[in-house]
Length: 250
Image (cartoon, rainbow, N blue to C red; front, side, top):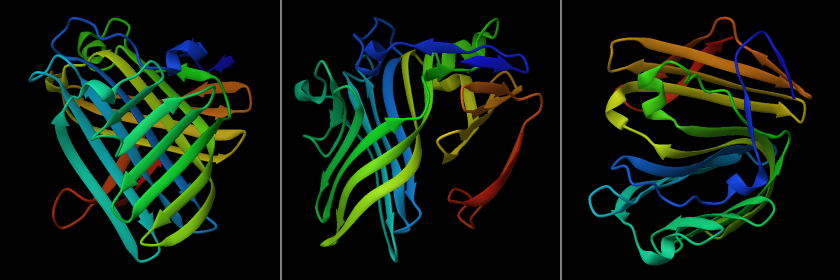
């Protein structure tokens, strides 16, 4: 892909879409993330499955949100890492409740009470990493390897007995390597796909060194345009945690 506007971009091969052998570091982790939306049916959600094999005897994280008209499902759990949670081509949690798999394409499945989902992803561009790391010790401690890709999402969702044939847009990310969570106090990750040739990634991080890092890019066709300036403002609910929207300027 052609780079415009400075910045650095690394492209990963297909082999890196599968889980990696864990490193020896206490903070070594691997995570897969998907955020998606089907505008026709007004359904969408967020999936993240993370493994931290050297932390507290081995842990796995489930972050799962699914929104349908009038209903929302949410789960945030940390569970012991089980032997079957990781295979050569998959990473999951809680006996298959949430599973990422790579079979030439990235796929996600959810099997929960009153919730069954199977999604397949069609990437719009190569697996790229534009996260700032060079010369920044704190940033290197947060994300060793990181992939961001805009994609089409197709599949089926059954929620509360109602079936939706999914055809939407989304963004996926994949990170692996040492990640010291204490290095970042707060962050904003705002991404979106408008169509096959237009997508973006915007990130801000408030670091424990009392610095704020800002970076991002826009993908237009086969061109990556790195941001000169970037700002993200989020709207917080009365509970000071939940998000109601926001504004990003790139």
